[in-house]
Length: 183
Image (cartoon, rainbow, N blue to C red; front, top):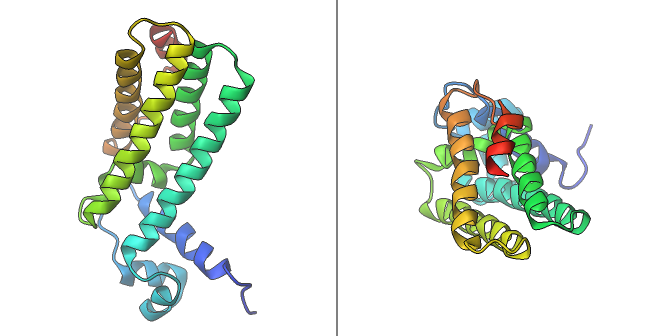
């Protein structure tokens, strides 16, 4: 049965995300990815010019999802502190539900890849910090920029712990207690 346009591309990205969920966290080759999808390596390159482009597509998905959800939270929660707590909870839950993506967010999957991919993740983190800064400024916090930086460090730290623990230590672990500290 023939696939509809874009389905193979989505299939490749799903397979890549699935391979990133491996507890060993090994480097993913195009040969491994092609075998997982059930196509030749040449078929991969019909959909993506490079492996870096595949990772960029994953980062695009992460950005679209995370910032769409963050904007919904901001629209629904008028209080800046509530916005920050709910966005943090969403970011940790997103990582937990998408363990392959957390390896991208934490930078682990990008170690041996194109440096511009890590730069994209850095920009994503800068955007998150700006979002936290705006929410804390809305809340009237006098040290809103510093607090935003600390909140981002907390989130990135939880992503790192999850990734480095072979996906065993969930980012939302002890969330109720952590939320009280962050509040």
